[in-house]
Length: 283
Ligand code: FE
Image (cartoon, rainbow, N blue to C red; front, side, top):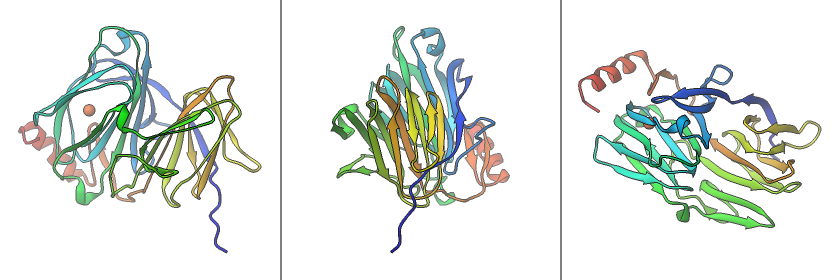
């Protein structure tokens, strides 16, 4: 018989407070010194605050080339606008999966003056053959994201499949899983992930016990658990109130990464070309 071992926790990484854009305060989890990247994931930011001073400056015009940005809003509204004429507002529960490909220049600005702004931005790399693809968007409002409800357990399926529910996002290159999980105290959630996929759990409220057997790891708020390879992962809610976490996985690309800020290519020559194209208005 051929069995796949359950997944455990390879390491825990604590998010680091930082700021980006025009001075937006956020927690950087992937893309910081303790975890520079996690192939195919290049960056994970959590933004979450009730204080408009932390977010009001937003992210004025900036470029991207060579990868995808995934914005998932929990609270608040964000307006995005790009140089190809695409514009819209992300409301709570919405997902924007943007394939920057050969290049876009866009802004991401809060569409509110007060109240809570909360969500995530994840950057996912593209394989060499797709880095210069035409830019495109996959955008879905909260109602378009399937949700599993079971004895207080709630799971939103943004990408991947769970008990017959399929997330709306399609990206064959990295075949991503992206679940948003709400876990009542003491309840268990298990999910089989494709073997060989890089996977992590990021806890954003409460506390979870992750993995099984001798060494499950207590993962606290604002900690990311990098999972060992294998099949299923087990999470158990360990807080007095519901634990909330995202579970994300994807096929690693195993290609050279040359990155500088918002450009992520395979070689330094391609990076130089990205700068030149941007400066000459070719995005
Ligand atoms: Fe951006």
